[in-house]
Length: 364
Length: 240
Image: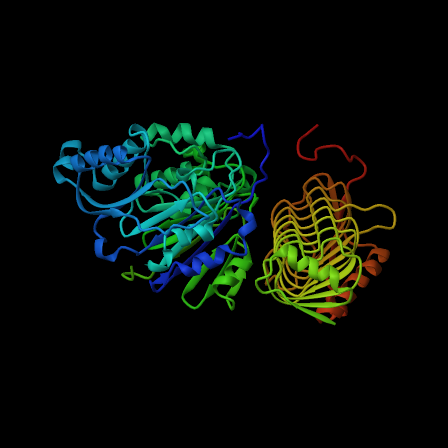
């Protein structure tokens, strides 16, 4: 494969999301439909979806989705898992054979619970233990990649156009209260199965349109805290940054958005709300290496909600609309209209202005 | 008038049908098809539904009317003709526009009028009825941008960093603009009598397309922004 410099691939990418604030379940057909008018934003080198609320029967277990290059790798990985987790159920993820999706790896899912004895001996809480186990597999087990590791959620991704990836994974058979989707147009990095979006860790998933100029600065900083960037593309670092800021540092989503899409110093200086000004000064001073520069529009999915965010210069497009209890988000209004033709209150959030939607208490 | 049902049509096929039709045309059921009317020199195209990005790119004299919102890069590098949007437009509207006119009933996204330019009789005009996002008129080199802020509800009618890198053309903003921070290389001032006459033409046309009382709109104070020609190369993005 030619790399950037040998060939110039113009940037594109498409993102979309839909969430029911009532926690009402929707099949995957709706979000697949959203990707159709944005077909030309992708080039067939990656498509994927994240779905929340799809595994109610295993909701107390971490759902690990894995790619393996061969049977031998799977056996090795299962041995590793068995030493650390109780595996309550494991199976091949059902797929359809279609001409548009080829060269698929071996794709399995495992519903697991960490052994209490393992947590006690490593002195870790459950989530940190799962996160470290994911990093260990992705780093130390060649040919095995965990591409989803949250509870009651899952990501589904492949090399192909997103509409085809949805058909491949039979997403019409899943019911979730929140869905995100991505069509990929890789610019600087290879188009491979592990490099398709969403990028997930625990229940955080990221779909991203753009490219991160600050990638290496961000990567060097985040790798000091045990995260390993192994997937050969920039977006995964956003997932780890959000996990670090929200789960580990316990920032609110809004504060995390102010770290990664911080306003210019000049804009902060001219703020009239003194408390807001001090907050931004504090966050920019404390986390300078986590400012993400370059164009991005992202949707962060998590259990019970999602957050959409543009870079501070708004170098990528993103629109938001509403229909009854649903909030719809996409790179283009046409995608929203494909999901809900009569969507209301269509608006474009400003650069750095997070849109946070949560499902009402107890509904997921 | 011909009618084309755009539902499910791919953009190439849609544009080919549009070119073949040879008369005024109504497109129904449009949803995200890009490049509609690219380079077309004649006839009126009316669009129902949301057209895709780069609507009327390189437009060369045709008139496009959209009954809904439009997406990004409306009128990219357009040369002549008119685009009339009965809703809002996305980012980078009128990108490198070099002639013709764009009228938007509602709001514009980021970077409206980026790198508009003019040459002799070719003077592009963009009239935005609502508010405009940040970086309005970025690198503007010519032409006219008007922002009326009709539905602003007391909020600022333009976002942050308007006129960054502006080095030609002119901008009319409704209101006295005291809270808006402009860069050092432009000057803001009230319009002259001649400029008020010029503005009247644009506002009359806006009201003819979308309704509203032109006289009432024109009783507000306006601010004109032009590059400071005394020292055009001092500090565009950096001090030099």
